[in-house]
Length: 86
Figure (cartoon, rainbow, N blue to C red):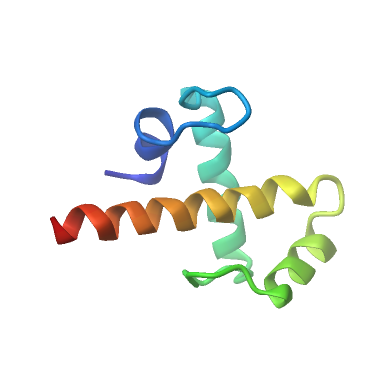
C-alpha cells in the first residue's frame, strides 16, 4: 500500500472524521516528495526541531501543511510496520 492509498482508505482525519479525497492525498504525497527531494526529510521516525526549522525556512507561505504531511507519513510507516507484524 502506498502513502496516497493509506490516506484515502485507512487514515481518518480528526477534523472531518473521514478519509482524505484523492486530490488531498496527492497534495500530501507531492509535499512529501518535495521534502525528500530537498533532503529536509530522510525517513526519520520522529519530527525533530531541526526538521521543523528547515521546513519553516524553506516553505514560508504555509509550513504547517508540511509538518502535518510528515505526521501523516510517520503514521503511515507505523501502520505498515504494524500490519507486517501480523
